[in-house]
Length: 192
Image (tube, rainbow, N blue to C red; front, side, top):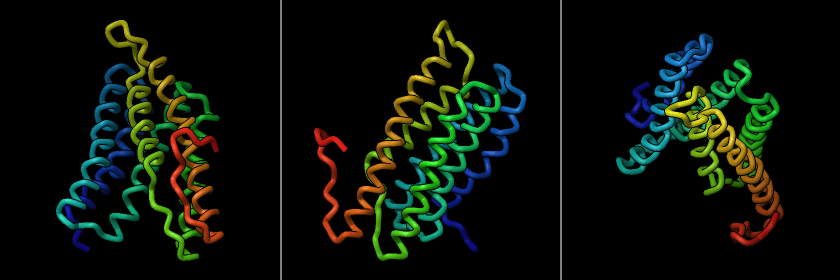
């Protein structure tokens, strides 16, 4: 099968995960720095592959399947290694990974019922915030007097709140669509 450039970028995001995992198995200032660079580069391909696919009209079913899967593999693997190194509490990784599995399952059920649940702005921003948080946490060691780990945890907590909220929003959208009611986007001042 011939892969187009956007899909190759997505596959590269998955292929880099084992390298990041190996680097984090031997945590040190330089291995963490290398893991952070690789993770950030992989995160950048997430922005690039979608834009490139739309711009060049190379959107494929394989690309639509692999893109969110690559994000989940990248972030989940890094979170698991952060937990292994005792840099992130395990419950945070459990919540983030569980939400992703639940939403993926929900979208599969919805597709079988003819309901399309498109990624919303909360889900997209959640992914960006997770990638930023994890990249900072991978760096781990203080840099020029900046408590990098504390900063990463702060961003991760914001990311966690958005992760839970966007997961709730997917389920809410699914229920509305299933009941035949139009799913109106939540207003900024509307509480769940």
